[in-house]
Image (cartoon, rainbow, N blue to C red; front, side, top):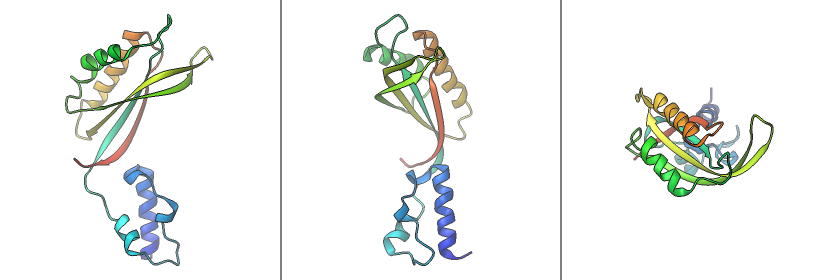
Length: 155
């Protein structure tokens, strides 16, 4: 396998794992192009370790009407998230929509919690599932979306 083919295969493999945030078309050289110095530097491994990343998406519309306040969500994270992930997490606010089991499309403000943790954290999966369960019970929610990926992190 040629150097260019190996580089292309490595870039595709890294993109599939979610490492480096994806690969732009311009970052993958064509078979006939030799890598320029900036391209070669961009393809070098970034510093850090491979960790897991979990995102949890929380709807904020209350079944009886109204919406969770920021203070209510902060109280929830103080009680349910911080003790389980005291090293840190990120909270994002957005707007989204989803179709419930009743077929109705709901548009609502949402909160996203992002947690990164080492593969060696054997309790993380249970803790994340406990957070989801706690939120659904506390705020009568049908679902809390969970996504998992692998990231390269450096502090």
